[in-house]
Image 1 (tube, helix red, strand yellow):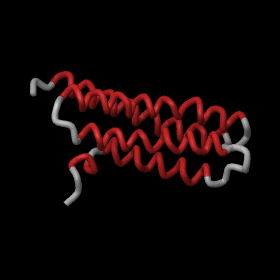
Image 2: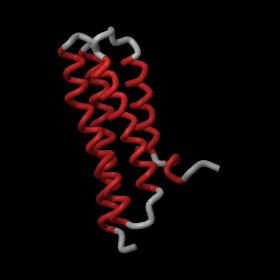
Image 3: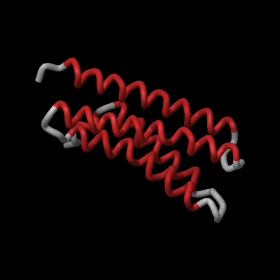
Image 4: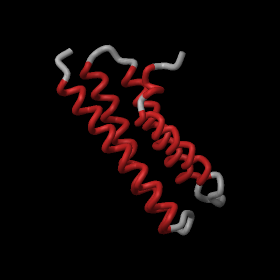
Length: 120
């Protein structure tokens, strides 16, 4: 039986995004290890914090972890921009990844608002 967070569309999209980042960064040349590491960590942090937040008992804890996940998604934006500027990813790939991030951030914002609106 899957964990409850695995059913969340935002979690699934976050894992898909992290996988796409892993696939892309595998092709980065030597000398860009700093960018590979930071981008992979930030992208994985999105789904990891969604999972951890969903496992918390209090509304404030859940909201905090969903906020951290949103921050990690936004952290990926300048990292992807640098990769584009350095010619490590093309403009089309950059735009597609940023579109994925925008959708994830919107869903996380909705999750956070949902935490705020619930009385329990």
